[in-house]
Each structure stands twice: as structure tokens, then as C-alpha cells.
Length: 273
Image (tube, rainbow, N blue to C red; front, side, top):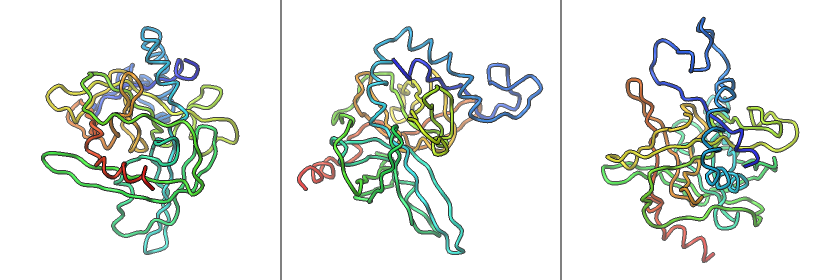
């Protein structure tokens, strides 16, 4: 299980006015770095992976298919902003799948787009197709990107049918954070050398609302997970993480659970190019 034996996330309780000891915050309520919360949660996921070794092997085998994506946006006043999100290779590395909402900017324009692999290789990207829409019947929030210099590499297998399992597994870079070679939680773009590995979380889907997942081990209520792959217990790509919705003391993870929400004619057209 290599890296994922030590991958762990801390379970945060949304909207809680008083932090408890298991929040990873000291008794005096001192504000600490968010990375400390993830470090504090390593034991939590390690325990789960020891009891479910197949899950650890599945997640570990898909680390190389995950990416940290950076969008640089310039606004009308000249100010620039760097937006981070997650993504994954599909079709043997020829394309990248991620969330689409980060590309829709009201008063600015996209001036830079690149990805970083776990080996810290930088990839310049082009946008092939994107979609962002929500209605009563479906949720579409996806973007298909292509490296300027495509290369064949590890990619995720896409499942066209609906997923019937209860558990789901997410690999991504919350807030641009990751694990480095020494198993420390770091800001992935600031690591000088060595590989950076995505953080993982084990979730379960809502039985009454299949488009919602909630964390069983760990929680990531921060930006940066948009577009992260949602995997089945076999490591197949079953959906994309989209956004977070909060209610009192509950963090709900909104996501595109079924890959059928992404038009397969769009994917098929990529294969014929």
C-alpha cells in the first residue's frame, strides 16, 4: 500500500461553533494550519486500510493517474488569480478529465493552464470540451483537457453503467495539498523535488440521494478537490467530485456520481480523432 498506508484525512464537522479534541485543534481553540488537520488524520485512514488491504492496493495503483491542475485567470483590472483543482488521465493519458466550473469566469479570462503529475512533471494543456449545467434530472460539471504534448501513461478505466456499490473512493489535491516522499502533508506546488501524492478519502453514497456522498474516513471541506476522480472499489472511474454543500453539523459532498452524466458521444468522438 506504499503511500496510501499513511494517507489520512481528518473528519471536520461543518458549522460546529466549538471545536472538539478530535478536530485536531488544541483545547485552547488555537487556529492551526489546515495541513495539520490532514497530518492528524493519518492514523484514521491507515487503520481503515489495514482492515481493507484491497482498498489500499486499488488506491495506490491509481496514484499515477491523478493530477493537480492549475488555472491562471486575469481580471479586467490586471489582477491575476491562480485556481487549483484535481483531475485524472483517461484514454492512456491522451486526455484529462476534470470539473468544468473553474473555467467559467464572469469578469476575467483564462491565460494559463497546466497540470502537475505525481512525478512533478508539468504539462501545458488545451481545453477540448467543457460543460457546466444543473437541472432536476442531471448534473453536468466536467471539462476534457489535452496535454499539448500527449504521452501514454497510466489512466483510469471509465465505467459507462451506473454504479451499484455503496462505497466510493476519492483521490485529489484539496487546497493544492499532497503527500511528499517523506509522507508529510505539503503544498504540492511548493515542493522543490521528489514526487507528490494525492490525498485519499473513503466515502459512502446517500441511499436516498445517489448524487451525494459523505465521508466515512476523513473529510475535505476545502477547495482544490473539484474534478477529483470518484472511484469504485475496483478502481474504475465512476464519477467526478464537483462541490460541497453544507447543512448544520453535516458536510455533504455533491458530485457527479454516474459517468453517464458525461455524454459518451463526447468521449467516443475523442477516440476517433
